[in-house]
Length: 74
Image 1: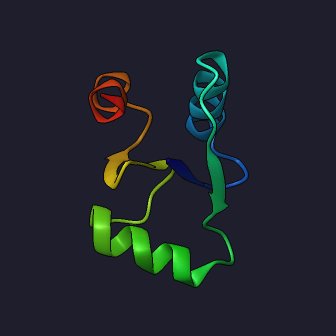
Image 2 (image 1 turned 90 degrees about the horizontal axis):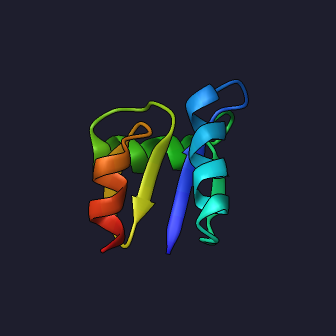
């Protein structure tokens, strides 16, 4: 299961979503703006509120980091 925590003007969020689509991977997009529960969750798991934060099988990747995303997908 892939979840991507995003903000509306985040270029890296858009790149991450396009990357997942290109690999035919399903993901759930969760907005951070106006969503204090999501903000609190990513703060507790990733140690910061930034975008994108990607959760893959319980692992959190901060930013659009190809290597870490590929590692989490294994």
